[in-house]
Length: 60
Image 1: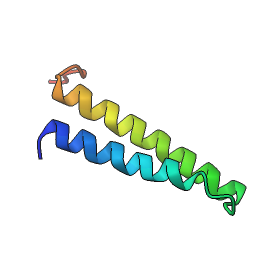
Image 2 (image 1 turned 180 degrees about the horizontal axis):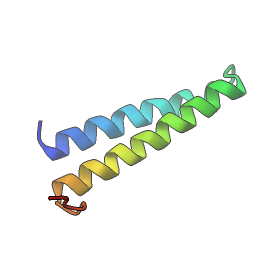
Image 3 (image 1 turned 135 degrees about the vertical axis):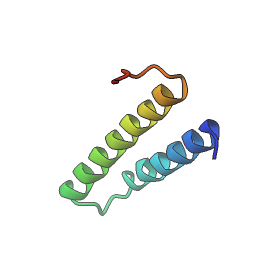
Image 4 (image 1 turned 90 degrees about the vertical axis):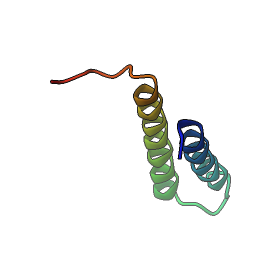
């Protein structure tokens, strides 16, 4: 997979979770868990972009 495929796949998974948030029968705990998971995907997508564009810290 290349960068754009990975980023697209992660964004698709994140969107699926965001759509689940709209379900009226979710408990508060389930909504909180979905929000944390969506935030994790934001972080993973950011790291993916940083890695692709080599913007992260280099530790030797």
